[in-house]
Length: 428
Ligand code: F3S
Image (cartoon, rainbow, N blue to C red; front, side, top):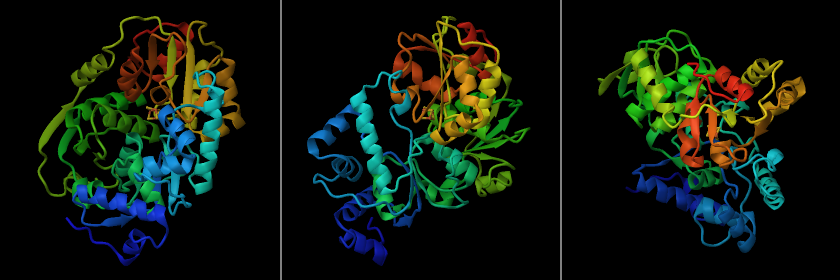
Protein backbone atom coordinates (compact mmCIF):
# COMPACT_ATOMS: atom_id res chain seq x y z
CA UNK A 1 0.00 0.00 0.00
CA UNK A 2 1.23 3.53 -0.80
CA UNK A 3 1.29 5.67 2.30
CA UNK A 4 -0.27 9.13 2.19
CA UNK A 5 2.21 11.78 3.36
CA UNK A 6 1.63 15.39 4.35
CA UNK A 7 3.77 18.10 2.73
CA UNK A 8 5.84 18.31 5.93
CA UNK A 9 6.42 14.54 5.97
CA UNK A 10 7.38 14.55 2.30
CA UNK A 11 9.90 17.35 2.95
CA UNK A 12 11.43 15.41 5.86
CA UNK A 13 11.69 12.31 3.66
CA UNK A 14 13.33 14.39 0.91
CA UNK A 15 16.10 15.62 3.20
CA UNK A 16 14.91 19.10 4.19
CA UNK A 17 15.89 18.49 7.83
CA UNK A 18 19.14 16.64 7.23
CA UNK A 19 20.25 13.05 6.65
CA UNK A 20 19.26 11.58 10.03
CA UNK A 21 15.66 12.79 9.71
CA UNK A 22 15.51 11.57 6.09
CA UNK A 23 16.83 8.19 7.23
CA UNK A 24 14.26 8.11 10.04
CA UNK A 25 11.44 8.82 7.57
CA UNK A 26 12.72 6.11 5.26
CA UNK A 27 12.65 3.62 8.14
CA UNK A 28 9.14 4.66 9.24
CA UNK A 29 7.81 4.40 5.69
CA UNK A 30 9.26 0.90 5.26
CA UNK A 31 7.83 -0.07 8.64
CA UNK A 32 4.43 1.45 7.82
CA UNK A 33 4.22 -0.22 4.42
CA UNK A 34 5.06 -3.60 5.95
CA UNK A 35 2.11 -3.10 8.32
CA UNK A 36 -0.25 -1.85 5.62
CA UNK A 37 -0.54 1.50 7.42
CA UNK A 38 -2.25 4.09 5.25
CA UNK A 39 -0.42 7.02 6.84
CA UNK A 40 1.71 8.25 9.71
CA UNK A 41 0.33 9.92 12.82
CA UNK A 42 1.90 12.74 14.82
CA UNK A 43 3.31 11.77 18.20
CA UNK A 44 4.83 14.01 20.87
CA UNK A 45 5.48 11.31 23.44
CA UNK A 46 8.16 8.66 22.93
CA UNK A 47 9.51 6.16 25.48
CA UNK A 48 12.62 4.62 24.08
CA UNK A 49 15.89 2.84 24.48
CA UNK A 50 18.66 4.08 22.19
CA UNK A 51 21.72 3.43 24.34
CA UNK A 52 24.51 0.96 23.63
CA UNK A 53 23.06 -1.69 25.88
CA UNK A 54 25.04 -4.78 24.89
CA UNK A 55 28.78 -5.56 24.77
CA UNK A 56 28.40 -5.95 21.00
CA UNK A 57 27.01 -2.40 20.67
CA UNK A 58 29.67 -0.97 22.95
CA UNK A 59 32.37 -2.58 20.84
CA UNK A 60 30.61 -1.25 17.71
CA UNK A 61 30.65 2.27 19.19
CA UNK A 62 34.37 2.04 20.00
CA UNK A 63 35.15 0.79 16.50
CA UNK A 64 32.82 2.94 14.39
CA UNK A 65 32.96 6.35 16.00
CA UNK A 66 30.81 6.60 19.10
CA UNK A 67 27.12 7.01 19.85
CA UNK A 68 26.20 8.66 16.52
CA UNK A 69 27.31 5.40 14.90
CA UNK A 70 25.24 3.32 17.34
CA UNK A 71 22.13 5.46 16.77
CA UNK A 72 22.63 5.40 12.97
CA UNK A 73 23.07 1.65 12.76
CA UNK A 74 20.77 0.30 15.47
CA UNK A 75 18.03 2.96 15.66
CA UNK A 76 17.87 4.19 12.06
CA UNK A 77 19.06 1.13 10.13
CA UNK A 78 21.62 3.33 8.35
CA UNK A 79 24.82 1.80 7.03
CA UNK A 80 26.54 5.19 7.08
CA UNK A 81 27.05 7.26 10.20
CA UNK A 82 24.75 10.31 10.20
CA UNK A 83 25.00 13.11 12.78
CA UNK A 84 22.01 12.80 15.13
CA UNK A 85 20.13 16.07 15.78
CA UNK A 86 18.17 16.88 18.96
CA UNK A 87 14.85 15.04 19.27
CA UNK A 88 11.59 16.73 18.25
CA UNK A 89 9.31 15.10 20.77
CA UNK A 90 9.13 14.54 24.45
CA UNK A 91 11.34 11.48 24.87
CA UNK A 92 12.09 9.43 27.95
CA UNK A 93 14.64 6.65 28.29
CA UNK A 94 13.49 3.20 29.47
CA UNK A 95 15.29 0.83 31.83
CA UNK A 96 18.84 -0.29 31.10
CA UNK A 97 21.10 -3.26 31.63
CA UNK A 98 22.48 -2.21 34.98
CA UNK A 99 22.24 0.36 37.73
CA UNK A 100 25.35 2.56 37.50
CA UNK A 101 25.36 3.33 41.22
CA UNK A 102 25.26 -0.39 42.02
CA UNK A 103 27.51 -1.56 39.20
CA UNK A 104 29.96 -3.40 41.44
CA UNK A 105 27.23 -5.56 43.06
CA UNK A 106 25.86 -6.34 39.60
CA UNK A 107 29.27 -7.46 38.36
CA UNK A 108 29.71 -4.56 35.92
CA UNK A 109 33.27 -3.30 35.41
CA UNK A 110 34.45 0.31 35.67
CA UNK A 111 35.09 0.67 31.93
CA UNK A 112 31.47 -0.25 31.16
CA UNK A 113 30.21 2.27 33.71
CA UNK A 114 32.40 4.95 32.15
CA UNK A 115 31.00 4.08 28.71
CA UNK A 116 27.49 4.22 30.14
CA UNK A 117 28.07 7.73 31.52
CA UNK A 118 29.30 8.96 28.12
CA UNK A 119 26.25 7.35 26.46
CA UNK A 120 23.92 9.04 28.90
CA UNK A 121 25.58 12.40 28.26
CA UNK A 122 24.94 11.81 24.53
CA UNK A 123 21.23 10.92 24.95
CA UNK A 124 20.65 13.75 27.43
CA UNK A 125 22.24 16.23 25.01
CA UNK A 126 19.74 15.04 22.37
CA UNK A 127 16.94 15.93 24.81
CA UNK A 128 16.06 12.42 26.00
CA UNK A 129 15.07 12.42 29.69
CA UNK A 130 17.26 9.99 31.69
CA UNK A 131 14.33 8.45 33.58
CA UNK A 132 15.64 4.92 32.91
CA UNK A 133 12.52 3.18 34.08
CA UNK A 134 9.89 0.73 32.87
CA UNK A 135 7.29 2.94 34.65
CA UNK A 136 7.46 6.32 32.87
CA UNK A 137 3.94 7.04 34.18
CA UNK A 138 5.35 7.17 37.71
CA UNK A 139 7.83 9.90 36.95
CA UNK A 140 5.82 12.53 35.15
CA UNK A 141 4.91 10.96 31.81
CA UNK A 142 1.13 10.67 31.99
CA UNK A 143 -0.23 10.96 28.45
CA UNK A 144 -3.63 12.55 27.86
CA UNK A 145 -6.67 10.52 26.84
CA UNK A 146 -6.46 9.75 23.12
CA UNK A 147 -2.87 11.00 22.79
CA UNK A 148 -0.81 9.14 20.19
CA UNK A 149 2.41 7.81 21.72
CA UNK A 150 5.32 5.62 20.67
CA UNK A 151 6.35 3.61 23.72
CA UNK A 152 8.63 0.67 24.27
CA UNK A 153 8.36 -1.75 27.23
CA UNK A 154 5.34 -4.05 27.33
CA UNK A 155 4.28 -3.28 30.92
CA UNK A 156 4.30 0.47 30.18
CA UNK A 157 2.47 0.02 26.86
CA UNK A 158 -0.45 -1.87 28.42
CA UNK A 159 -0.70 0.81 31.14
CA UNK A 160 -0.61 3.61 28.54
CA UNK A 161 -3.41 2.11 26.43
CA UNK A 162 -5.63 0.75 29.17
CA UNK A 163 -5.34 3.14 32.12
CA UNK A 164 -4.72 6.46 30.34
CA UNK A 165 -6.69 5.68 27.16
CA UNK A 166 -3.67 6.99 25.23
CA UNK A 167 -2.67 5.12 22.08
CA UNK A 168 0.48 3.16 21.39
CA UNK A 169 1.69 -0.11 19.97
CA UNK A 170 4.63 -1.92 21.52
CA UNK A 171 7.38 -0.19 19.62
CA UNK A 172 10.95 -1.33 19.14
CA UNK A 173 14.32 0.38 19.30
CA UNK A 174 14.27 1.23 15.57
CA UNK A 175 10.80 2.76 15.37
CA UNK A 176 11.21 4.90 18.52
CA UNK A 177 14.61 6.14 17.38
CA UNK A 178 12.97 7.32 14.15
CA UNK A 179 9.85 8.64 15.92
CA UNK A 180 11.90 10.92 18.17
CA UNK A 181 13.52 12.63 15.19
CA UNK A 182 10.34 13.06 13.12
CA UNK A 183 7.47 13.19 15.65
CA UNK A 184 5.74 10.51 13.56
CA UNK A 185 4.84 6.83 13.91
CA UNK A 186 2.81 4.55 11.57
CA UNK A 187 -0.95 4.79 12.10
CA UNK A 188 -1.94 1.17 12.72
CA UNK A 189 -2.81 -1.25 15.54
CA UNK A 190 -3.84 0.46 18.77
CA UNK A 191 -3.75 3.95 17.20
CA UNK A 192 -7.00 2.99 15.46
CA UNK A 193 -10.18 3.13 17.57
CA UNK A 194 -11.68 -0.05 16.15
CA UNK A 195 -8.69 -2.17 17.21
CA UNK A 196 -9.09 -1.05 20.81
CA UNK A 197 -12.47 -2.69 21.31
CA UNK A 198 -12.83 -5.76 23.46
CA UNK A 199 -12.63 -9.28 22.07
CA UNK A 200 -12.98 -11.49 25.18
CA UNK A 201 -15.43 -11.22 28.08
CA UNK A 202 -13.93 -12.06 31.46
CA UNK A 203 -16.03 -12.40 34.60
CA UNK A 204 -14.25 -12.03 37.92
CA UNK A 205 -15.71 -14.40 40.48
CA UNK A 206 -13.24 -13.72 43.29
CA UNK A 207 -12.12 -10.66 45.23
CA UNK A 208 -8.70 -9.23 44.33
CA UNK A 209 -7.32 -7.78 47.55
CA UNK A 210 -3.59 -7.24 46.92
CA UNK A 211 -0.96 -6.53 44.28
CA UNK A 212 -0.18 -10.27 44.25
CA UNK A 213 -3.87 -11.08 43.58
CA UNK A 214 -3.88 -8.70 40.63
CA UNK A 215 -0.58 -10.14 39.39
CA UNK A 216 -1.97 -13.68 39.50
CA UNK A 217 -5.13 -12.62 37.71
CA UNK A 218 -3.10 -10.87 35.00
CA UNK A 219 -0.88 -13.90 34.59
CA UNK A 220 -3.90 -16.18 34.12
CA UNK A 221 -5.57 -13.75 31.74
CA UNK A 222 -2.56 -13.11 29.48
CA UNK A 223 -1.97 -16.82 29.10
CA UNK A 224 -5.53 -17.31 27.83
CA UNK A 225 -6.17 -14.27 25.65
CA UNK A 226 -2.58 -13.78 24.38
CA UNK A 227 -2.57 -10.54 22.34
CA UNK A 228 -6.33 -9.97 22.29
CA UNK A 229 -8.31 -7.32 24.24
CA UNK A 230 -10.08 -8.63 27.37
CA UNK A 231 -13.05 -6.85 28.96
CA UNK A 232 -13.23 -7.59 32.69
CA UNK A 233 -16.50 -7.43 34.61
CA UNK A 234 -17.02 -7.90 38.33
CA UNK A 235 -14.12 -5.92 39.83
CA UNK A 236 -15.25 -5.40 43.42
CA UNK A 237 -12.75 -2.79 44.63
CA UNK A 238 -11.29 -0.09 42.40
CA UNK A 239 -7.57 -0.92 41.80
CA UNK A 240 -4.87 1.69 42.42
CA UNK A 241 -1.70 2.37 40.41
CA UNK A 242 0.26 -0.46 42.04
CA UNK A 243 -2.43 -3.09 41.38
CA UNK A 244 -2.91 -1.96 37.77
CA UNK A 245 0.86 -1.97 37.28
CA UNK A 246 1.23 -5.57 38.52
CA UNK A 247 -1.86 -6.69 36.59
CA UNK A 248 -0.78 -5.28 33.22
CA UNK A 249 2.85 -6.39 33.60
CA UNK A 250 1.73 -9.97 34.30
CA UNK A 251 -0.79 -10.05 31.43
CA UNK A 252 1.81 -8.75 28.99
CA UNK A 253 4.36 -11.38 30.01
CA UNK A 254 2.32 -14.60 30.07
CA UNK A 255 0.60 -13.31 26.91
CA UNK A 256 0.99 -10.27 24.72
CA UNK A 257 -1.82 -8.14 26.16
CA UNK A 258 -1.34 -4.52 25.09
CA UNK A 259 -4.78 -3.31 26.11
CA UNK A 260 -7.56 -4.35 28.47
CA UNK A 261 -10.79 -2.85 29.73
CA UNK A 262 -12.07 -2.93 33.31
CA UNK A 263 -15.77 -2.11 33.07
CA UNK A 264 -16.66 1.04 34.98
CA UNK A 265 -13.00 1.76 35.73
CA UNK A 266 -10.78 2.22 32.66
CA UNK A 267 -11.67 5.17 30.42
CA UNK A 268 -12.79 3.33 27.29
CA UNK A 269 -15.12 0.99 29.20
CA UNK A 270 -17.90 3.01 30.84
CA UNK A 271 -20.11 -0.03 30.05
CA UNK A 272 -19.73 -3.52 28.62
CA UNK A 273 -21.43 -2.40 25.40
CA UNK A 274 -19.03 0.51 24.85
CA UNK A 275 -15.98 -1.67 25.64
CA UNK A 276 -17.01 -4.16 22.94
CA UNK A 277 -18.08 -1.43 20.52
CA UNK A 278 -21.32 -3.25 19.76
CA UNK A 279 -19.57 -6.49 18.77
CA UNK A 280 -20.22 -9.83 20.41
CA UNK A 281 -17.36 -11.26 22.51
CA UNK A 282 -15.47 -14.10 20.81
CA UNK A 283 -15.26 -16.01 24.08
CA UNK A 284 -16.35 -15.73 27.71
CA UNK A 285 -14.04 -16.70 30.58
CA UNK A 286 -14.48 -16.90 34.34
CA UNK A 287 -11.74 -16.36 36.96
CA UNK A 288 -12.56 -17.82 40.34
CA UNK A 289 -10.84 -19.57 43.25
CA UNK A 290 -9.92 -22.68 41.25
CA UNK A 291 -8.26 -20.59 38.51
CA UNK A 292 -6.40 -18.55 41.13
CA UNK A 293 -5.04 -21.68 42.84
CA UNK A 294 -4.01 -23.27 39.54
CA UNK A 295 -2.22 -20.08 38.45
CA UNK A 296 -0.29 -19.87 41.71
CA UNK A 297 0.82 -23.48 41.27
CA UNK A 298 1.85 -22.82 37.70
CA UNK A 299 3.83 -19.72 38.55
CA UNK A 300 5.65 -21.53 41.37
CA UNK A 301 6.32 -24.63 39.25
CA UNK A 302 10.08 -24.08 39.09
CA UNK A 303 10.50 -23.88 42.88
CA UNK A 304 11.03 -26.76 45.30
CA UNK A 305 13.80 -25.73 47.72
CA UNK A 306 12.72 -23.48 50.57
CA UNK A 307 16.12 -21.96 51.33
CA UNK A 308 16.00 -18.55 49.60
CA UNK A 309 19.22 -16.83 48.44
CA UNK A 310 17.82 -13.69 46.90
CA UNK A 311 14.68 -11.57 47.14
CA UNK A 312 14.05 -9.11 44.32
CA UNK A 313 11.29 -6.52 44.57
CA UNK A 314 10.43 -3.72 42.18
CA UNK A 315 9.07 -5.30 39.00
CA UNK A 316 7.65 -3.11 37.57
CA UNK A 317 9.76 -0.48 39.35
CA UNK A 318 8.42 0.21 42.83
CA UNK A 319 6.42 3.29 43.77
CA UNK A 320 7.38 5.33 46.83
CA UNK A 321 4.43 3.77 48.67
CA UNK A 322 5.82 0.30 47.95
CA UNK A 323 9.29 1.30 49.18
CA UNK A 324 7.68 2.63 52.36
CA UNK A 325 5.81 -0.63 52.79
CA UNK A 326 9.05 -2.60 52.40
CA UNK A 327 10.71 -0.35 55.01
CA UNK A 328 7.76 -0.86 57.36
CA UNK A 329 7.90 -4.64 56.96
CA UNK A 330 11.65 -4.58 57.64
CA UNK A 331 11.40 -2.39 60.74
CA UNK A 332 13.24 -3.97 63.68
CA UNK A 333 14.44 -6.86 61.51
CA UNK A 334 17.51 -7.74 59.46
CA UNK A 335 17.99 -9.43 56.11
CA UNK A 336 19.35 -12.93 56.76
CA UNK A 337 23.12 -13.33 56.40
CA UNK A 338 22.64 -15.97 53.66
CA UNK A 339 20.12 -13.93 51.67
CA UNK A 340 20.17 -10.65 49.72
CA UNK A 341 17.38 -8.13 49.15
CA UNK A 342 17.50 -5.82 46.12
CA UNK A 343 14.63 -3.40 45.42
CA UNK A 344 14.37 -1.54 42.10
CA UNK A 345 12.72 1.86 41.63
CA UNK A 346 13.04 4.83 39.25
CA UNK A 347 15.85 7.31 39.99
CA UNK A 348 13.37 10.07 40.74
CA UNK A 349 11.57 7.95 43.32
CA UNK A 350 14.83 6.86 44.92
CA UNK A 351 15.73 10.54 45.30
CA UNK A 352 12.48 11.06 47.22
CA UNK A 353 13.06 7.89 49.27
CA UNK A 354 16.58 9.12 50.07
CA UNK A 355 15.25 12.50 51.13
CA UNK A 356 12.67 11.10 53.53
CA UNK A 357 14.91 8.35 54.95
CA UNK A 358 13.11 5.35 53.45
CA UNK A 359 16.21 4.19 51.56
CA UNK A 360 18.28 4.44 54.72
CA UNK A 361 15.71 2.39 56.66
CA UNK A 362 15.84 -0.38 54.05
CA UNK A 363 19.63 -0.28 53.95
CA UNK A 364 19.90 -0.31 57.74
CA UNK A 365 18.03 -3.63 57.64
CA UNK A 366 20.49 -4.99 55.07
CA UNK A 367 18.50 -4.40 51.85
CA UNK A 368 19.53 -2.35 48.87
CA UNK A 369 17.57 0.18 46.79
CA UNK A 370 18.69 0.26 43.17
CA UNK A 371 17.61 2.11 40.02
CA UNK A 372 17.56 1.90 36.24
CA UNK A 373 17.30 -1.87 35.82
CA UNK A 374 16.21 -5.19 37.38
CA UNK A 375 17.54 -8.73 37.50
CA UNK A 376 15.72 -9.79 34.32
CA UNK A 377 17.15 -6.85 32.35
CA UNK A 378 20.64 -6.97 33.81
CA UNK A 379 20.84 -10.78 34.09
CA UNK A 380 22.44 -10.02 37.43
CA UNK A 381 21.76 -11.55 40.83
CA UNK A 382 23.89 -11.92 43.97
CA UNK A 383 26.67 -14.46 43.43
CA UNK A 384 25.63 -18.06 43.96
CA UNK A 385 21.87 -17.41 43.74
CA UNK A 386 19.89 -20.61 43.18
CA UNK A 387 16.49 -19.75 44.69
CA UNK A 388 14.72 -16.37 44.45
CA UNK A 389 11.55 -14.93 45.97
CA UNK A 390 9.51 -12.35 44.06
CA UNK A 391 6.30 -10.36 44.43
CA UNK A 392 6.02 -9.89 40.66
CA UNK A 393 4.39 -12.41 38.37
CA UNK A 394 6.29 -10.90 35.46
CA UNK A 395 9.67 -11.37 37.11
CA UNK A 396 8.67 -14.89 38.21
CA UNK A 397 7.86 -15.65 34.58
CA UNK A 398 11.24 -14.50 33.26
CA UNK A 399 13.90 -15.11 35.91
CA UNK A 400 13.95 -18.94 35.92
CA UNK A 401 14.54 -18.90 32.15
CA UNK A 402 17.06 -16.03 32.22
CA UNK A 403 19.13 -17.03 35.26
CA UNK A 404 18.33 -20.73 35.60
CA UNK A 405 17.04 -20.19 39.16
CA UNK A 406 14.05 -21.49 41.09
CA UNK A 407 11.45 -18.74 41.69
CA UNK A 408 8.84 -18.40 44.43
CA UNK A 409 6.02 -15.91 43.91
CA UNK A 410 4.13 -14.36 46.81
CA UNK A 411 3.03 -11.15 48.48
CA UNK A 412 5.47 -8.41 49.42
CA UNK A 413 5.12 -9.52 53.06
CA UNK A 414 5.96 -13.13 52.08
CA UNK A 415 9.05 -11.89 50.28
CA UNK A 416 10.29 -9.71 53.14
CA UNK A 417 9.70 -12.64 55.49
CA UNK A 418 11.83 -14.81 53.18
CA UNK A 419 14.55 -12.15 53.07
CA UNK A 420 14.73 -12.02 56.87
CA UNK A 421 14.37 -15.74 57.61
CA UNK A 422 16.21 -17.02 54.53
CA UNK A 423 13.31 -19.45 53.98
CA UNK A 424 10.17 -19.50 51.86
CA UNK A 425 6.96 -20.09 53.74
CA UNK A 426 3.85 -20.37 51.59
CA UNK A 427 1.70 -17.33 52.22
CA UNK A 428 -0.85 -16.74 49.47
FE1 F3S B 1 10.68 -3.36 34.76
FE2 F3S B 1 12.46 -5.28 34.80
FE3 F3S B 1 10.02 -5.78 35.40
S1 F3S B 1 12.43 -3.61 33.44
S2 F3S B 1 8.76 -4.41 34.25
S3 F3S B 1 11.40 -4.40 36.51
S4 F3S B 1 11.27 -7.05 34.08
